Length: 191
Image 1 (cartoon, one colour):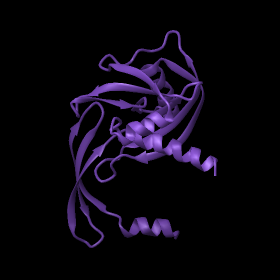
Image 2: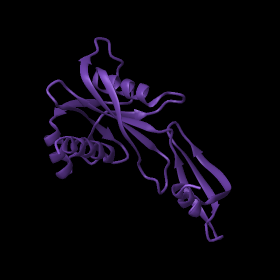
Image 3: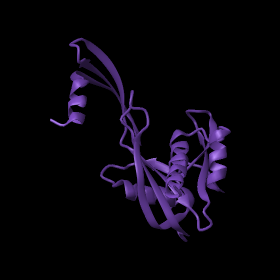
Image 4: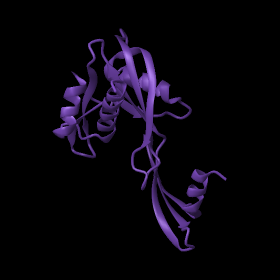
């Protein structure tokens, strides 16, 4: 047995009982009774999410396309990169192209997957896929944003985006993560 597999098994929690408390449009909430590795039992509150994508969209002049939008959970507007949840059966790259078009009116000639990460593994299974969209072009009859979504576009350099992270103008974790990931990739190219 491989060492990584052994480590997973070592800490595995066996589900004894599962109650789905809520199922909504985006998430569901369940409580699982689990048997711990030491034989004791515990309860785990888990948010199930279909997964999401976010898109670092780079313009011809190397600016990043960001969106500012109101987030009710925070009761404030925040700056983010374009993002959205996966629809049932939809491939992440299709979601990335759809969200890029809906939120920005752009399409892209080049779309590449950079990395995927879990947002809050202590209580949620949401996996976010980060894409880099380059060779952007404006779409004449672009699909509008969702009818309950209002966004304003802005374009910033990578350096400006980093400054926005440092000054907490960017509060969104996926955007901060994506900006720093892009910077690290650039730094590694030059060393």
